[in-house]
Image (cartoon, one colour):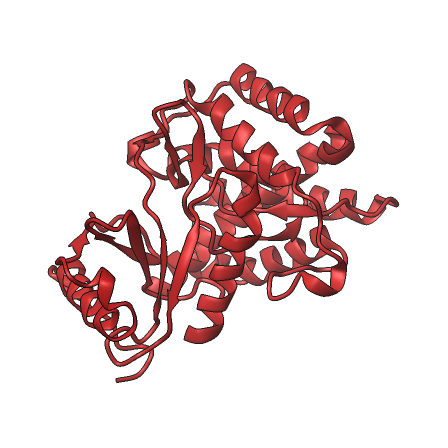
Length: 308
């Protein structure tokens, strides 16, 4: 069995749960005594399997959205959880199940968070507080930031990612108005970033902070439960991802189109919690917002083209 052999079909989550149990019997038999419970299959990147009585979930990769081999993908995701843990707003990482015959892509065993999906706009202040706690974490020395992405110029690296995804725009066969809207943002963003003379400040960021990736605890605090894409980059990208309509309507359980006043209030709350020194000037927020929107829509175009 190779790393591309994964459960498939309508019973994939049940099959995945059985594979998790088999892997646990080998590595962590104390957690394999009860039959794992598959959770509803909602995401593109993982199955989630509850380990009854342990307080843990198994996050089983379906794929690597960063095109990493199985072992490297687990190492990257484990680093995401470990680096973000001091914020207090992410699940704790407990163990890593290495790739095996039972789980070709391995799995992470993380804290099970008991909570409710985010409700917008009601829970938006809690989301930006959680992001501010993440962004406020002290930076590791540059040489210790791997394996997480840590580009010297984070915005230039992001523009390169957007350009790579934008190569699929023609094949995606978008409506003319949609393509014109993308082009109208892309050229001015590149020009504005090229004219900028100050280096971009870097923080640890989630880079996948859409509201569907949060759960709200009973005390009202938000927990970011999906961390596979964390990197060192521009903090305002996360606030953009939490408030753009391309993100707030992604997950049906938290779907909502925010109005401008609600978006502005989110940025103000984030800046107040984080502090202006780390949040950066507002003009940079809007560049980051344009970039995050372009990344999102070109990512969707790539998926549409590749799935055709």
